Length: 72
Picture 1 (cartoon, rainbow, N blue to C red):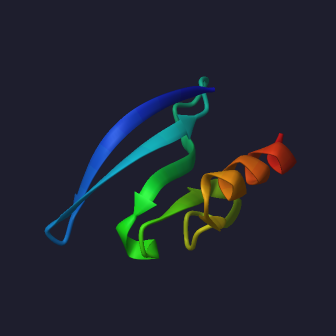
Picture 2 (spheres, helix red, strand yellow):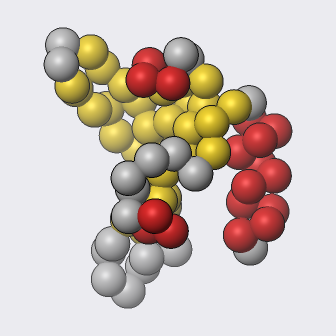
Picture 3 (cartoon, rainbow, N blue to C red):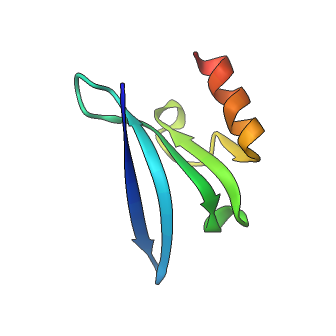
């Protein structure tokens, strides 16, 4: 896997995130946003697990860390 960082512009807003991708296909596996403006400034994780349809995690960095402990 590899990680890249991105600034995303949407509806006049700007959000920073980083994405974890499959090294062989380049497909995004997870998108992690430290302060997701769509989620009241909380951290969020979206992923292939549910086709990026809704957050897999919304909360603190500990919530994000715990999610990835369970995925690994």
